[in-house]
Length: 221
Ligand code: CA
Image 1 (cartoon, rainbow, N blue to C red):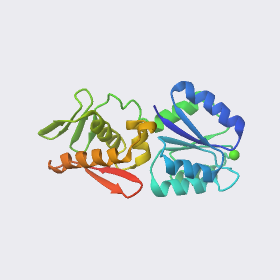
Image 2 (image 1 turned 120 degrees about the vertical axis):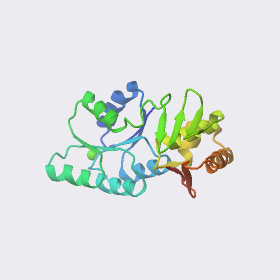
Image 3 (image 1 turned 180 degrees about the vertical axis):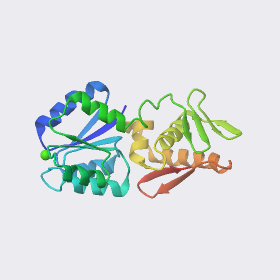
Image 4 (image 1 turned 120 degrees about the horizontal axis):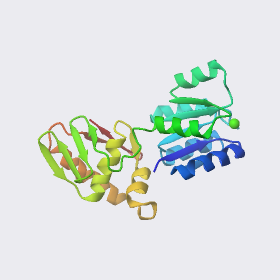
């Protein structure tokens, strides 16, 4: 399930987006201004951001700038501004795509899917990062000639980090997705990270898990 953060101050657009996205299986969160959007982003990095540009406080471009300092999460700008200069500056600041209002729902969904393809349907998909192969059918990781199977939670942790390799995955996201928010126990997350790291350290060519203190983890090939 993809987690979408909608940044939009116009309630009728927010409603329309929810009606479009929820039946498609997206988990929708909304923010009606730029600061709320950044707080929501920092609390839990979404899989994709739909970003309006004209917001009541800071501009959508400022939100984009702040997001890009921390993450390469896909950002699709959805704006009434249709001038070439606006589109170019959003893309130059790191937006992945730009859709002008009014837009068709089908096109919006297609664009979101195109920009999140790397993340979609990862449940049973074999993941490859560098020399490391994660095989969900066997709960197994292979690194060249070495293969080891993992307990479920550790496997899911490896899977989430590999899916988003090179990007920071926040502790909140890991706790929520793997343990479920109500069971989220950060000590158990620390422990699982430590175990997974130890397994990787024994194998030459294995990826590295780096810690961003207080924020989260990043898997580097
Ligand atoms: Ca607006």
